[in-house]
Length: 111
Ligand SMILES: [Zn+2]
Image 1 (tube, protein in one colour):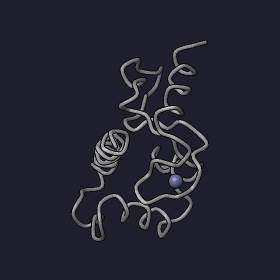
Image 2 (cartoon, protein in one colour; image 1 turned 90 degrees about the vertical axis):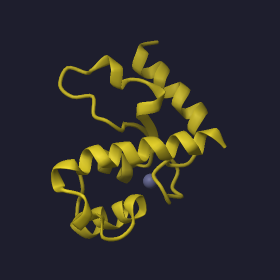
Image 3 (cartoon, helix red, strand yellow; image 1 turned 45 degrees about the horizontal axis):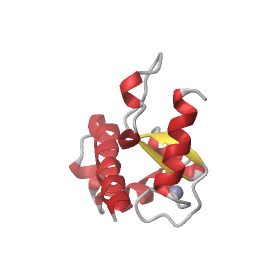
Image 4 (tube, helix red, strand yellow; image 1 turned 120 degrees about the vertical axis):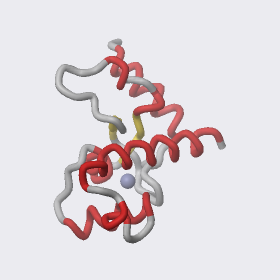
């Protein structure tokens, strides 16, 4: 079993059934990287602290992909509270999202 599929199994055991996005009650279906792996696959990104078990929609959003602004905005309201798009410069959205989710999954998994 390769490193990535071993990590995925470990994540499933650690995270449980539900999507780990803040406030989401959907079942998780896939592993998402919080800070992106980048081209060529950075080894250091493949650790339990940098991955989350997520539903399809939130896994896409973790990669910065979305189908509509209202959907994206609403999901990020759950992470940062309303008005985040005014407070956080656009160039930092991906970084701040990753940091917030990393903090959230850490606390969630401890309890
Ligand atoms: Zn979700």
